[in-house]
Amino acid sequence: MQGDLCKVDDIQKVFKLYRFEAVIHFAGLKAVGESVSKPLRYYSNNLVSTINLMEVMSKNNCKNLVFSSSATVYGQPESVPCTEDYPLHVTNPYGRTKLINEDIMRDVHHADPEWKIVLLRYFNPVGSHPSGEIGEDPMDYPNNLMPFVQQVAVGRKEVLTVFGQDYPTRDGTGIRDYIHVMDLASGHTKALDKLFTTPDIGCAVYNLGTGKGTTVLEMVAAFVKASGKEIPLKYAGRRPGDCREVYAATEKAEKELGWRAKFGIADMCRDQWNWAKKNPYGYRGHQELEVHAQKFIKSEPLSNRHWAL
Ligand SMILES: NC(=O)c1ccc[n+]([C@@H]2O[C@H](COP(=O)([O-])OP(=O)(O)OC[C@H]3O[C@@H](n4cnc5c(N)ncnc54)[C@H](O)[C@@H]3O)[C@@H](O)[C@H]2O)c1
Ligand SMILES: O=c1ccn([C@@H]2O[C@H](COP(=O)(O)OP(=O)(O)O[C@H]3O[C@H](CO)[C@@H](O)[C@H](O)[C@H]3O)[C@@H](O)[C@H]2O)c(=O)[nH]1
Image (tube, rainbow, N blue to C red; front, side):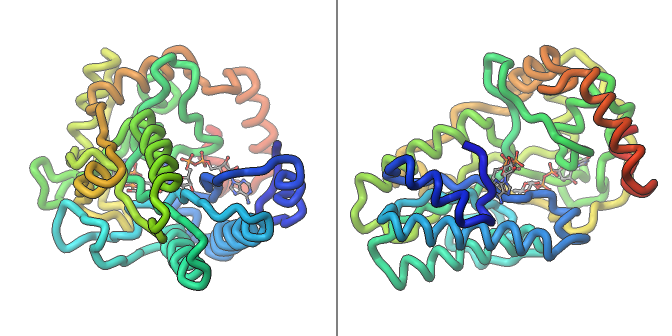
């Protein structure tokens, strides 16, 4: 069923039709840059949706929740890997909505201990379903590294801009913990198992990452190897708000959820390339995308056009 979590009625309709044991709450806006220019849109959508959802869940006596949080709540940590008890520090409105949502959930559990909540802090999800049938298809200009790399590989973009080559890292580019979406998915089923089998889980938090840091250039090299395509690069200054290096401590998830990532960056790039070559224009196909782009160009001011060109 489709609905808007900012509309309580939409949620109530679903809860009238079905009885849920638990909810996995993925919904939210997630573009960091857009959140800086449109903070109210982010606060309004990402917070109101969570509050409405939890209110309706509570009324329907469904108090088991898994939430998509993010490694962004660690900001630039003092040291890596980040353990779940690190101080939380956000640098943009998107990140702040994740942190506020986490705080809301901690408060709700504190007020009503019947709530059982798992906060999953995702690191950098990439890759696709191994079938090549399900993958990421950004609706507009891709902000994240791998969707951009993919669009260069299929010829939709000419060149990848590397943001920053002067970080104190092994090749000067930023380090992240890239995790295969299939591993991320299995982390959710493990989190649900944990909720259902742990009466006193409270509001628990787990990192979902591999524990390994990879630079931008290493990630590009892995994709070149998997695809056989060239990825031309150009270098630009650091992207505002980017941190130098983040990767996950994975011990807590391993010990308490019985989960650890199985896939490495070669697997992520292989599966993402399989999706990309089968669907170079995503779910919508080339023609539909062109029509959409033309409409967009006609209706939007010049400054917003760049993505469609
Ligand atoms: N992809 C990442 O790099 C990443 C990293 C950390 C955390 N997360 C979080 O994981 C979750 C899923 O991310 P994703 O990559 O699949 O993002 P996505 O943008 O592909 O999916 C989010 C979905 O939420 C829906 N949505 C937004 N507001 C809604 C509302 N008010 N009512 C109903 N639906 C609404 C959107 O329509 C979209 O389909 C998000 O909460 C995101 O912040 C993602
Ligand atoms: O065109 C690009 C895009 C990215 N990068 C670099 O690639 C790395 C990864 O960037 P990106 O894929 O945008 O991921 P993050 O900035 O790490 O943020 C992602 O990962 C966070 C969790 O770690 C989530 O909270 C965010 O929503 C999600 O966008 C960074 O060093 C970027 O500077 C480039 O060099 N060129």
